[in-house]
Amino acid sequence: MWDRAELKSLAKQSLKGNYWQAFCISLVLSLVSGSGGSSGSGGTSERTGEYIARNPDAVIIFLAILFLALAFRLLLGYSLEIGARRYFANLAQFKNIKGYFSFAFDGSNYRGIIFTMLLRDIFSILWTLLLFIPGIIKAYSYRMVPYILTENPNIGAEKAITLSRKMMDGHKFNTFVLDISFIGWYILGLLAFVVGVFFVYPYFYATEAQLYLVLRKNALEAQYCTYEDLNLKREFNGFDDYYRDDYNGRDDF
Image 1: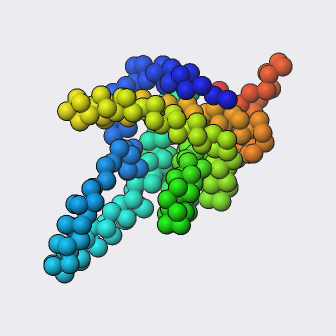
Image 2: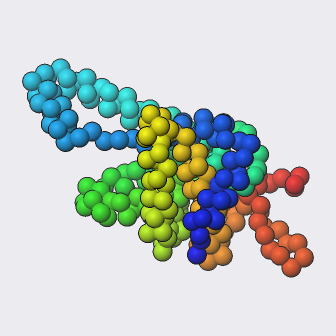
Image 3: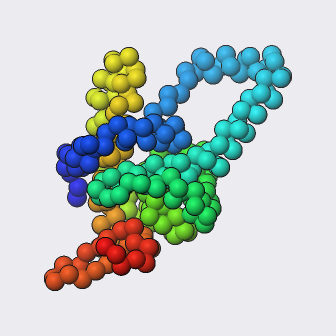
């Protein structure tokens, strides 16, 4: 079992000397993944509905905006999210943090990312429409899908979703507690003219990346996946069997 304080401590270490770059990447990630967004109040939604009812043209405008938002999410948002999460995953391992966005937009990687992320979102929406609480639970079950794709975008949608579900099995509640442990920081951010919230994002995403590394290790040990599934190379060195990720068939490490 992992420890929240240890994950946060490792996250802080990874951000040393990289905070401002991580800050910029976290802004992109929060934008394309919807993190940190606030929903409108019920009263505002009701007034919006009344306005649309009185102005039929508003329906067309609303649908056009919705279409553009969905197109952005599909064509750019998914890959930008995976690229940003790859940055934080590499940062967590103190690895080379270059080429994270180009990786996500490269050929078959791009296609694999779009298909898997779209299927994940469809499943999440369907579960939420069924019942709100099961929707939240499933959102946690699928939490590691983007990180899995940072290592192998072509692992396959069904395999990525199943692997994420197995990784999160027994860890969903603790991950929820980890999430709410940042509330104090977000409150301080709100007090700092609201914009202070954005400065919490690098810390949050760096911690989440550390969580993925722990769950990845557990999944490999439990044989939920192979090293090849995640493009990892296993080496034997003395008495230790260890892995190195980001392996693409090279022996120059």
